[in-house]
Length: 403
Image (cartoon, rainbow, N blue to C red; front, side, top):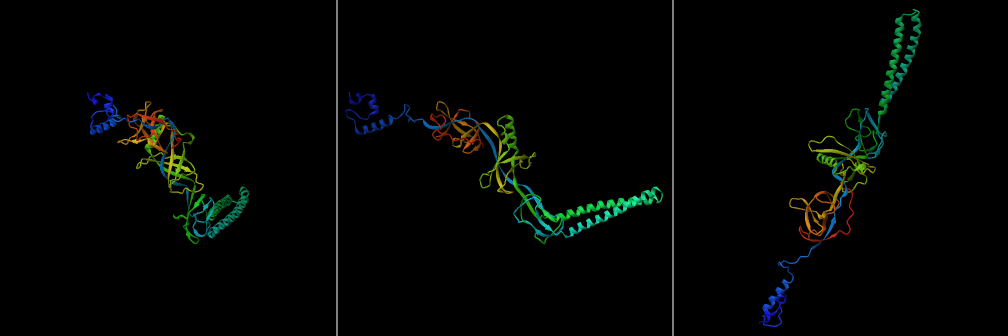
């Protein structure tokens, strides 16, 4: 019997060396290669792969304030075009262009000479009519007993009484003329109709203005507060009402009308606004509804016509899950998916309904249950059907409460 045949079976499989005997050098080299490869293989010949280590996050429902970001434009709270109410030559401009003016502040002076003369004439006419009334009343009073005694005719008495009545009517007319003259004289001082910031002047002293002209002298705009007009789709409004009716989301309570604002340069406006109203009619061409919010603007940072983004609160979802964005993938159909690890460390692929982004997380409204664990780190190493070693995330980031 040869030395090779007398060696144990295990020695022949795992060791290329022989105690003695005639084994050729090529055969020994081949045996070494087979021994090195065969000792690290499983019974089926496949290499042994250790379970991947991943970090998981246990899902718990949270209360999230649902919001909608909509583009909009700023609109002035009040706009007043200054126009003359009497005709004449402008003798003075009493304001600085671009400055703030208050309601009742004089802006222009129109030559008052002719209107002052009309007022004085009306006052004189009133005095004349009052004197005529006194004479007519005295004559009528003297004629009354004489007419009763048949010393004068009743016609003479009636004429005297009629003259007294005409004098009273003339006084009323004169008083109305005085009031009209006084109003016209006051209109020669053109006042600011509202408090706000005045723009450039379209006339200078010496210009002739008329009471019915279409061109305004200047425009005063009230900037504090200021409106924000946004267009919200009718479909979104319908969805919100259905979710509220079904109990999927709750109203945000006293703060339901709060609106936040992002400026055109991406910065956040420091003061919150409140929702004023929504139009009752849907624009047939765009399918949108105009929604208006009002914001305080004491620093005049917001100017009419600026492009902004308004964040409107829709309601509160008490059963939402916040999933880190790095945990969410998309399949070939574009559906959002996550990897779920069960209690035995087995990985499964799960379709979810991901809504809007909230910081670095997605608001998930369907597809997950409380207590389930999703892979947040090591997604590339985990595969559906594989076995993993799951470690709970050590320090979860603080979850924001509104979005």
